[in-house]
Amino acid sequence: MSVHSPDVKKVTTHKIQEMKVRGEKISMLTAYDYSMAKLIDMAGIDVILVGDSASNVMAGHETTLPITLNEMIYHASSVVRAVNRALIVVDLPFGTYQGNSKEALNSAIRIMKETGAHSVKIEGGREISKSVERILSAGIPVMGHLGLTPQSIYKFGTYSVRAKEEAEAQRLIEDAQLLEELGCFALVLEKIPAQLAARVAQQLRIPVIGIGAGNQVDGQVLVLHDMLGITMGFSPRFLRRYLNLGEQITEAVSKYVADVKAIDFPNENEQY
Ligand code: KIV
Image (cartoon, rainbow, N blue to C red):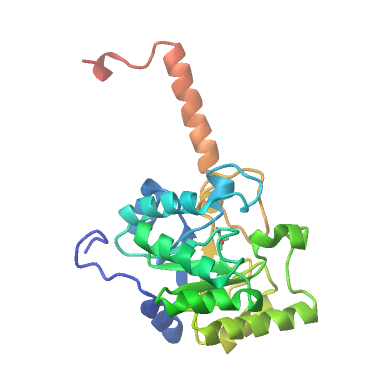
């Protein structure tokens, strides 16, 4: 059965909870547009994150801070039109949920109503607990995100590994427990020591998805453009590149340019 048949079994927040219980790892990647989302859904990805990393890889900003709610809605709608099986999670962008819980709820409602996505993700722990509660009270599933939270990059100062010190590790454990108690359906842990991530995954009932957090968690997420080798000059230790698509694309385009200049393209068979 193809994943595009109407009978395909959709991945839900309950399904990924069951995957954790039976020890099946959860695969998650980002996508921001129709074509890529269609390909990764057909390949069998479990969860697609319309990440605010779109700010970096789609728009070329240095950080995730500038992307707007309208822009996230545009990306998420394109992804939703492509996907048949995967669970779709959409990042609430910087400045749309930290101010107050009513604003957070309004932002999450706009994402759900205007895109057709299945859930939202927000960064932070106790400091955003009211926003998490309020979004959940409207029946909108929430994925948490702790560790390196890129929307706080100017507070951290660097993209280096978080929670190496005991006090920060303890705070992260407490925040993870709080997010589960509030009702989050899953949690992303970014760039923290593998041992700490393993401990959190063991303690929580909800699935814990890691990025740069070792393999003793319930699933993995990567930025699609990083693992395909489209983004250049970004090689953190946790990143495995499955393709060198960037090189392949520039090679193909150089060939096309040369063919056009040499009047080799189009040839007789490529014209009417
Ligand atoms: O925006 C994003 O791509 C993310 C992942 C790195 C988890 O939040």
